[in-house]
Length: 226
Image (cartoon, rainbow, N blue to C red; front, top):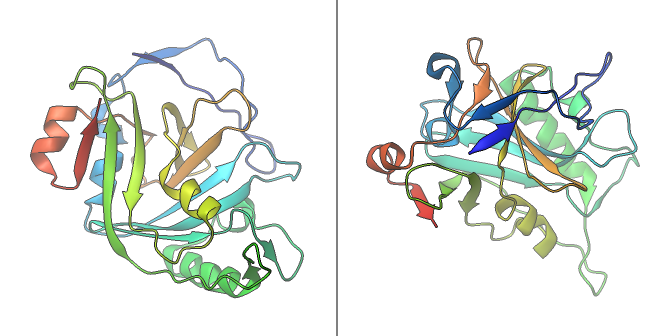
């Protein structure tokens, strides 16, 4: 399946102005030595920073819908999708993109205390986070090549229904290379696409789609959906 690699770096901060760059890649065309997959990252021996941003934003930097860590077979995501922040400021990608892992985790603790959300009756929603077993869902029409992926894990007590849906429902299908030190993959909506960002290792240039049979053989926490 052919994918358009899209992405334009702004001078000061990351933006996601979509436009064709006149270049198409087949699934698996990336140099394997310089790419990695979501399944590999989930099952790696160390945690990595991961965020999802919304490309439809009126701020200079994309707003964060959720953020957390992935690795060691675990996922820990913190919701920031539909509530508000007590300090009245947006939580943006620029505020975390240059942080190391320790600083990133401290920033999330700060924002967890700053974030507030209420249910339909006006009562505060108590949010609980922490590492839980994660799974990568591979969407494949032929059982061989991956067309899109999404995350899956127990989202109990992680905010509202909208927060939880934002964590596990989006299907990411557009590989967008490396953006300011982060590996990027987006949903394919024409309007308001979401982009998942994972902190890249030094030699990594892109996310890649899994070879379905290989991923299923290597990892127990991979599920294939046709």
